[in-house]
Length: 137
Image (cartoon, rainbow, N blue to C red; front, side, top):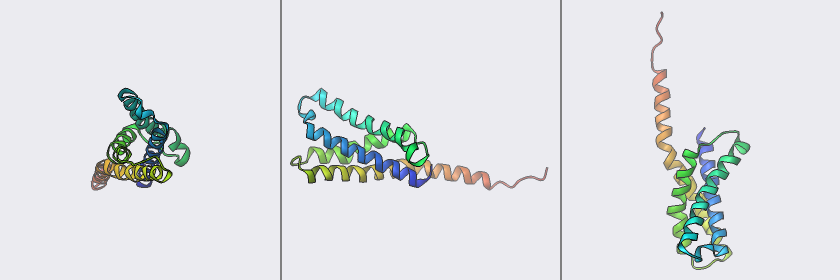
């Protein structure tokens, strides 16, 4: 998978997390109880990852791994989205749009940060094979 598809998958995941969290805030599910709130948070994380896993090959033709999506989904939810959701003053349209925007940016950020070590490893692993001089056997 190339770097554009890695960024696109993170962007879509973050946007979905922001959208689902906005729906969560609008519905008032998180105010019912601790168990319901934790279940809804877990649902937001997993639904976004599995949705991107399912629709991404239809968009780009590239398959993306859940090993890539679930950590990005979890990190995007924990750092930017949960923080802005907990500190949001109201459920106005501008606040919900900010949650979606921050989720999208967070998804791209965590997608880059999570994928960078693997991309560097693949780059050096593949280039080290090209450095060998073929023998004349």
